[in-house]
Image (cartoon, rainbow, N blue to C red):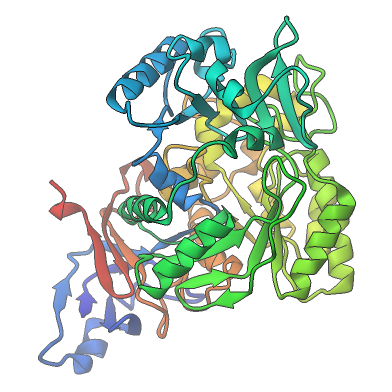
Length: 524
């Protein structure tokens, strides 16, 4: 295939799109880039010649932190509550869903954000008991670090006032001293282990649904950063059967919620389509639900969040993983959690400097943290899109000093730290990378409030963090830029994102391995 008369955003160093307007694709690879006249000798009778009419071609996106199967779950087996604006609206949706799905042993849902509710309160078992006292109901907050269940679920799980909260978790109680149905962090495992697990067939349905959604937004590579053994085996099966549909990097989780017994560390694996090269830990929760571990209390609160890990166990398991060839990725958002993780990463680096370990999210690092990350070659995947959808929470819960340093991408780049941007969906509903780029550039939440304005970066920088940097972070050597020899993973967009209003940019076509996997014009 020869695509010509295009505006090419290559992200190659020194690339001049005033001279080169054509791509020649052979099988799944970019064979050549140049002018139309330069590439004409490559044309043969089977070559498909496409006049791009000046449309922009750029590398497809790599979301380096997205829970792929969970994105698909909200389109298949779980009720999506993201965007609900009141408790009444949430309860009505749950009631309707229960009526439509009487066969479900459990009703599960995800996505509420109490900051959107008039009273700003997280629901309790009393609220969910209005829907049913005979069918167990489990509703996850949008961040997935807090959940609430009804009385029937508490009964099934044997949760009483005598149940002790696990390390790094919280069972909340009401005025009567009884569990009120709210759980946080590792305590969620006390409930989830009683919910019937999804089969591999179910998981494949979810993954296919998610992949279709990713293609729509020009995403052809992703990292699923919390994969349990059953999901990992499912991904392996799909890879072997050529069913993944994206380049996938799976991070096995080592410590499951509600248990201090780790999963076995799996074997290292790496191919062009599927990688298992990094293991995952959680050190704290999220800012939007006040469970990220801070040094100072949340605004108008004595709460400082939750630190989930025991240092010695964490260090031991991390060293075990490195011995098997794995890098380490640790969820750390609050400044206290970041400092905790850096203490262990320093020891890992001193023992073996060959590994580039990651901090996921990096919500509130200070200058000393960034200096340590630079010194110990620590990378990060950050989510500026949080500013858009969760900025209201940040403004409500963080003091001014925290707020002005929230998700400081510009400072991270200034310290020459390897950083990529990502979505962490389904924590956010909008997985469109251009939305994340917009947030990185303008630093505005969906209500127009500006957060940490001095941490803004340019459109070109933000696009590179979703493409070139993402490929480096993912250890994908043949993606992230349009260059000869790279895989033919690219998108066609309606306008040039370096010049046009980002809100106007739409993906018209997504190509993966040389094949068109999404075409907006063919969607009814």
